[in-house]
Image 1 (cartoon, rainbow, N blue to C red):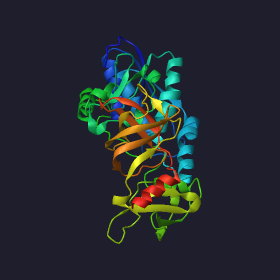
Image 2: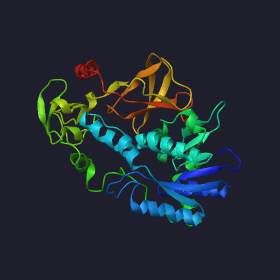
Image 3: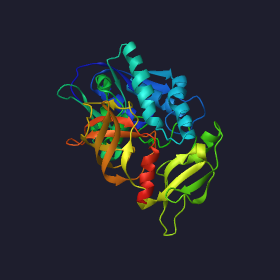
Image 4: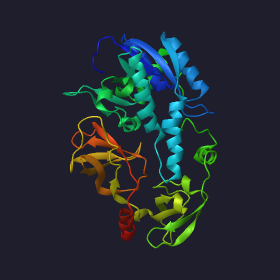
Amino acid sequence: MADLGTVKVLVAMSGGVDSSVAASLLVDEGHDVSGVTLKLWGGPSDAGCCSVKDVLDAARVADQLGIDHHVFDLTDAFDRHVVDPFVAGHLVGRTPNPCVECNRHLKFDHLLVASERLGFDRLATGHHARVVPGADAPQLRRGRDVAKDQSYVLSILEGSQLERVMLPVGELSKAEVRHHATERGLKTSAKPDSQDLCFIQTGQGRAGFLSARAVLTPGSVIDAASGETLGEVAAVELVTVGQRRGLGVDAQGRRRVAVAVRPADAAVLVLPQDKALIDEVPLEEGSATWTSASVGEGEPVLVQLRAHGEVASAKVVTRNGHPIALLLEEPVAPVAAGQIAAFYDAADPSLVRGSAVVATPAPSMLACQAERA
């Protein structure tokens, strides 16, 4: 972390070990630190980072560190920006990423603005990524621990936001984070990492959550190439583009993959796994955000299409200066509309350039995919 002198920092403390250590490191560096825990989900929760226990864990760590701890209620904003779009997206065949949208609208919008209004110089989180000085502006880079890197979910940050963001654990491995927490005797030192969405209870699952909020549609599984009906699914809205589970195998024993989800038609279109690959990713025009220099027409980038996915080489197609598609050098598994395509610099792979939202493919694009099958 660059030497900033002593600054006043608000640390978003989720109740997990990463944000606990982030706060601890900043205290050790002599900064004027306060902690805040966001109350995001107003319903029952036993997973993620929204349970009562998580709030208490954060408060206990703050007490250990001798810093003030606050709780901000952002439940209305969370419903509006994260939960409602999550439900609405599934009803039209999209699969939004709630963690990305929470970062976009809550942590690095509402909370960042609030921190400035309250007189804090910086907002810090426990994400495994790095903010480092650049020639003209701060840069967002992958975390040192490749296995725990979270730069993908921060790729929606804009350069102006990075000016006020600190990511103290980005230089550490997860093992080093645990070691620091143990050495400091922090209450969260052995706490497991959160794995699930905070607003979906264990045992409830996506099916239970969505069915409590919308009428789900039984539908047909259809071969995208031949039009043949191959089977049925209990709810079209619960199928994600790229999904293999529950869609069976073809006559050659190849697993089927969802290439389109159409709730309005009560249909899931599938192709064999080796034929479902795509070499073009459509992007929603105007959805791009730039963490560093924007990407121009035909410029090569490395793109990551899933939170823990591999990067792929691609070139960007633009219209009116906005990215509208990625042309991939090698085909990849299909990706659901609503997900994020994170751009990394082709010559400097740890540098985040920005991101855009994956769009629903045009019918012609799907038709070409089916013809190749």
